[in-house]
Amino acid sequence: MTPKSKSSARCARPSVCAPRSSTPTAPGCAADMIPVAILLLAAGASSRMKGRDKLLEEIDGTPLQARQCARAVATGFPVYVTLPARDHPRAAYATGTSIVEVPEAAEGMGASLRTGVSAIPEDHAILVLPADMPDISDVDISQVISAFQFDPEVSLQQATSANGTPGHPVLFPPDCRAGLLASQGDTGARHVLKANAHRVKHVALPGNAALTDLDTPEAWADYLAKRTPGG
Image (cartoon, rainbow, N blue to C red; front, top):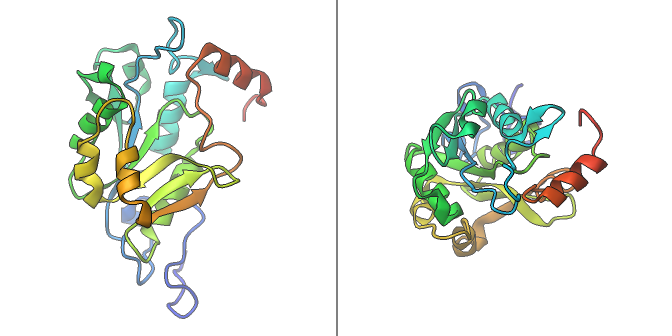
């Protein structure tokens, strides 16, 4: 791909983003030299699953954990996956990723964020994605990263549904690191988004991909009943 000239587009975006080492940079993009890592949150207890592990439930014969790890790895960016322990059954389905053990996983998403972020180099922007979102594809992840890299400003990028409802994933620039490391409880990074509301930009993904998560047996049954095999 040949970047467009300044006169035609200040920051032309490719349809699918590649890792920094191979992505042509367009002139004037504030974030085009900031490396990006993906943080897949997979340390939850599946407490609403009535004894089942939501990330080991299968779609087309593949555990959700394996499916989402593979999609993240397919983008070519480094992927970090938080797990309750390195010997947890989910670890078998984290091929190609860096596993981050979260000893305080029972606390909630805050512990997963703190521990995961601390494992990623300080100069990296971080795309945060819960692992229980089955419709987020490698193309979706790359689209959010591309929006960040080809933005004339260093902004937070938040995926939305097709109708504009905010969801996941969310990409945080390096200067948000301190806020992410202060995450507590199970509210995730809402405090970081609130503090940076003036610089949050939205990236619309198809349908409800940015909103769909599967954390109850009922949600799983409904999702599998409605989806097209292989989709």
